[in-house]
Image 1 (cartoon, one colour):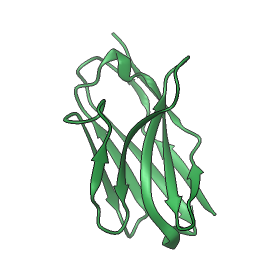
Image 2 (cartoon, rainbow, N blue to C red):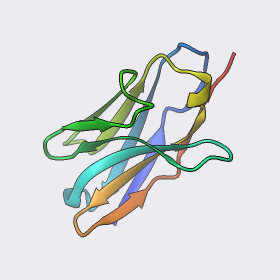
Image 3 (cartoon, one colour):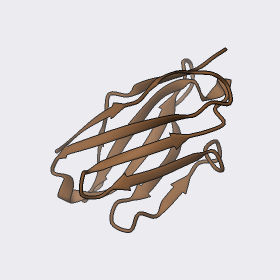
Length: 117
């Protein structure tokens, strides 16, 4: 099992930047990939992007391309989401999720990001 804790959420103005972090603990040696998702009120959970844990290769959903960057510290078992050019519709609870061998996925509790004037 893996436990995940997100941090870094908050209130930011449109056009601003924010950096989220996700710290993993537990059976981190079984992590194959880590993901960011987000969910706005009344909407389905949306894929933001993910990083392959071994290679560091990153992949992004359409809403994140060109604005968000995922990185990881392999030895500290942390993953970051650097967000820039934030828009009102980026307001959501952001979740990290770890994919382990055997198709197991674990979720964090989420961190709120609010983009507002």
